[in-house]
Every structure is written in C-alpha cells, then in structure tokens.
Amino acid sequence: MLETLRTTRYLTPLREGGSLPALVEAEDDGIYVLKFRGAGQGVKALIAEILSGEIARALGLPVPRLAFMQLDPLLGANEPDYEIRTLITTSGGLNLGMDYLPGSISFDPAVNKVDAGLASAIVWLDAFTTNVDRTARNTNMLMWHKKLYLIDHGASLYFHHQWPLALDKYNSPFAAIKDHVLLPLASEIESKSLELKSKISPKVIQDIVGLVPDEWLESEKHFASTTEHREAYVDYLLSRLEASAIFEQEAISARAKIG
Image 1 (tube, rainbow, N blue to C red):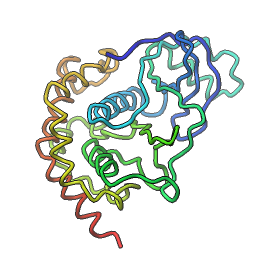
Image 2 (image 1 turned 135 degrees about the horizontal axis):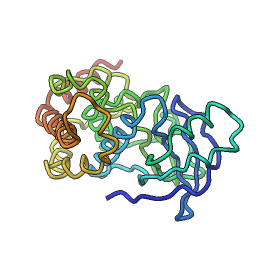
Image 3 (image 1 turned 45 degrees about the vertical axis):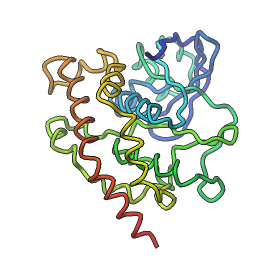
C-alpha cells in the first residue's frame, strides 16, 4: 500500500520538464516532489509513475518512496505565476508525491559510474515499460549519497493513451531503446532477464496495478468499469512480460550497433 498524506504547505515550483512539479511539505513534515493530476497528461502520467516506479521497486531497483498526496487547491492562492496557480487550482484532490532527495544531482554518464548488471536491469525495465525518457539528453536519474535513483516515469507505458490499440501492442520491440543513456553499459541483458522476470509474478503485477486509485481510472471511456480498466493494465503487462524476448533482443541488437 502507498501512504496517503495531506499536503500542508506549498513551497516552490520545480521548473524542469513540461509537467511543472512542485516541492511541498506534507503532514508527516516530509518534503515531497508533487506531481499534479492537472498537468499535461493528467492522471495517466500519475498512473505510469506508480506502475513503472513500483515495478522498478519490485525488481530491486532504487526509486524514491511514492505516496498519494491530498492537495487543497487553496495552498496555491499566493503563487504569483498564473500558470502554476491554475495548475494547483485544477489539481485539487488526490495527486502523487515522491520523496525529495535534498542535495541530489542529475546523473552524468561522463562522471558517474554504473556497473553492467545495474545498467542492464535498468535498460530491461525501461524496455518492458516502454519508457522513452531515459536518454542522454534527459536521464531522469539522480545521484544521492553516491547512490543512483530512478525518477520521473510519467512518460512510460505510453500505450494507455490509445487503449483501443494497446492490447495489440504488447509485443512491441520498443525501438526507442537505442537512445537509452545506459545502453552502452548494458552488457548483461540476456543473463539478467531470467532474474528480473522471476521477481514479477502475476500477483506482483496485480498488486501493483491495484495501487491505482479508482478515481484515476474512471475517466477512460473505452472501459465499462474501473474493474475492466484495471484488468486491462494487468493483461497488457503480463502479455508483455511473456513476450519479453522480443524487446530484450531489440535492446541487445541496438547495443551491438553502437560504435
């Protein structure tokens, strides 16, 4: 289960990326990076954050703790920026927070070292979840206390933006893996795959999908109920896992082409 916390203080916007997340304080006195439901891709980005982030956690990969955040839109009343104030106003209710890692710095592939096993596991994760946003231009990884952390998975699982086609796309080789920042280091994809797949049972997938709040599933017109919507995520992820050899081979072939 993910903890649900009340947001008690709005601190400052984080002007990085298109979704304009913010730093907030919660009732547990912790500081969180808040991802707004009213941002560009709406709750689908938050769903992707939960599913990909918690799959990463199940694989033993380092991700900051996630929590649901109840937001009172009045907390942004004194924000002078109209765009940000509007974003806060339209995001009242349940949002998603990620533990803030104070003093962390962006991962730099020219400076920070990652061993082949960890690099291979991260590439496998991102191929499985079709994450297009872990490139040299935007690594979406942080170094904190000399440890690497994976962040910002809102652009993953992009299949759910076109549900009528989604279940026919589970076997996509995911050609975008060629741009992954860690691909040059990922020399153990084939040997890592069995270990990683052993950690993602149908129950693990069902439990992770079960974390998504019903209210975030209600707006999808393609499904007759939230139960049907939730089951579609489970079916897609399990089908993609069963067809993992396709995206694994794509990653291995893409790496072989690197000069």
